[in-house]
Length: 408
Image (cartoon, rainbow, N blue to C red):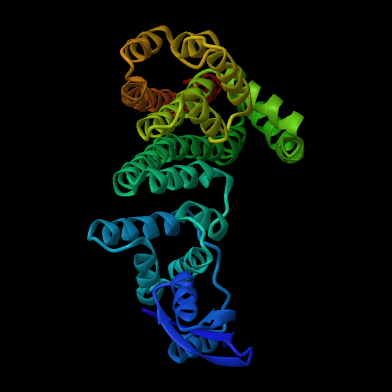
């Protein structure tokens, strides 16, 4: 039970102050009215201990991110499944959380719950973010249907799964990036350090470089002179792309171009479709109508070109068109995936169909990431081998030319 400080008027109209214990502000109001008082102000009393700790720290708490929101929801789920009411569970987290950011989030959610907001609305106000709008809506629907624990459990499982896919994407690119960097380092060492020494040694013996070695030295000198200009050009192009992407039209053109890039475009499309199937399976499984589920899912698609296509699909579905056929026609599903979804649609199990597609696209995304790793790794290793071979040939041909010049 929490304590609330109040200012109220009695039956004679005189003002009175005091404290009352209640689980939330609504219950405190009811208790005061039961005592014959008309409350004019109710504020939750803050304990001296908590106030002192906040004053001692003197630090601003950073706004909560996805990690803090997910941790809050996982602990909240544990308390709710244990039989605790949502309001009591949030207040418990506010009082016992050890992380300042988590405690700040719980306090903000509790304040809005006390004002009569739902958990979904409270989370939307306490931890705003476009990427979490759909999540908060699903939570609110879970409250309205009385199925919050299972929906929250499935939602958290999907968010963990999406985070795992994101980690795999980043991890799969780290090794090829490292190999490519090492290849560039080896090439720079051979061209700018080893070859000039070979040239000075050969010229010291009274001979010249072989034509192949001379070409390699000349190319490295040109590259060395052009490197600063190339770096500045790349930097300017990068800054221009950042500015252009800040505009809706520029962002749309960039996203459309990204889908056309070989390998990368397929990975972007599969990751977006995977997220789309995850959200739709959850929303439709929660009893939401297909039209509303598609409307909510639209905001979760990050690629603007795919979002445009999905909006066209949503309009067709609202007109009575087949979901599977519409998604295939607009390039969001391949024929095999469309056939799988069509089975679920015809049997009235559209949610199960999207759940099956989620697994299919997760496997497809993993395969594409694996192929990308193989291609980039092979290109990096092959490039390093080619540079080493070229330098070795340049050194050997120069040595042969020295031998021929001294009559060996």
